[in-house]
Image 1 (cartoon, rainbow, N blue to C red):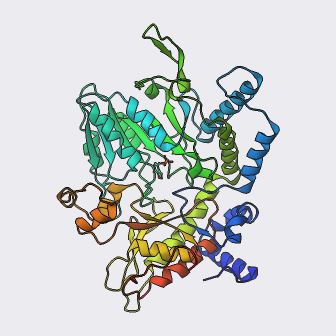
Image 2 (cartoon, rainbow, N blue to C red):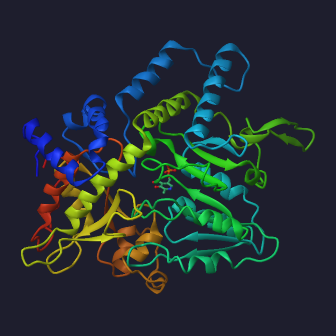
Image 3 (cartoon, rainbow, N blue to C red):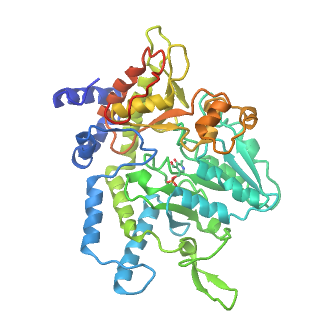
Length: 485
Ligand SMILES: Cc1ncc(COP(=O)(O)O)c(C=O)c1O
């Protein structure tokens, strides 16, 4: 381990060794420089940030450029025609163009619609997808709850929801099974298939090749790219999902409150909006029950978009372009494989494993989001609430629980349908009460995820923290306090 306090020479030597053993890492030194110049607050505060799948972090320069723009300008609501409004409209449209360009999406094929977050984009699709009785909504077990929730729109309109299971061994979908689900459609129906390009639970990357296979069998495809795009190139000139959803704060930390639905023009034309609002129409009357929808993206942007934040989207995308998504990708792959090795090699004195990984145990077709639990020497799981407290003492920010992805959790913890339906989620119960009631040992896993500003020292400090769980026979009754330990 190379503690933070050790001299720079030792750290540089450790980094040189790491770069030799992890080809490609040495080419990412530009990020070490950025960490020094733009993320100094992490080291100044002693933080190890390992929750990039929860939220990305912003570089200081992003804030400075955004603030400078706001301080130098006068911006009005972009729905007007006056000079301050026109100036804002120009920047909103520039941000929109920058999004399409970043994802290499042809403006002839795709439209970028700004939303409050990825969830807002999913809701737009779910509430307007023309589900009818006989139609199908197909989705993987491995999905965020904001995708799972679309089943309620499907149900309300009489469409059938089907889940494709993940395999317990590595939380991937059985590739021989998927075609059976995708070929089970007949007649003239609207059928929607939704899956994440990268799991926010296990880091599994589900194949983008599914998109064309699904298209060939008459499905529209909704690709949840929220956990994928912060560290992977999504090239919409090569893959052509009908709907792509994402949140920008996950990509580059700032701004929060802005996401996007990138939709194919022909798929967008199928959507039936359940209402109209300010911003989405050309005209409406009160004395005549009629309104004319606005064309393209405007029909889907309800009310006033988060206009002052939108220039920060262009700034953030420019940062990713400058570093290169491929560089960030290579960086987190190398650091992620080290973190994974730390966990898979963790052993108690009697040789028993110190941790269990949920998902792939190597770095094949996965991202740097790693779900695990520490294990006691008797093989039982260390309560993740205790792990969270110990992590806080190390100033390590991890995520614990099931990460809004219950399907992946159910498979990871081998929770059967019978177990779930056997327990009543009574009024006033918390999730912890329910977990106890159905006889599960703990409420979830621990997740470490890497991103834009991660460095080797973060992973080394995680390694030192992991050693705290070696030979831990039981969890103390008194949890350490979160602050001041
Ligand atoms: C894969 C995935 N999809 C969707 C979401 C929802 O994103 P948001 O909360 O920004 O709407 C998340 C958030 O963690 C995610 O990881």
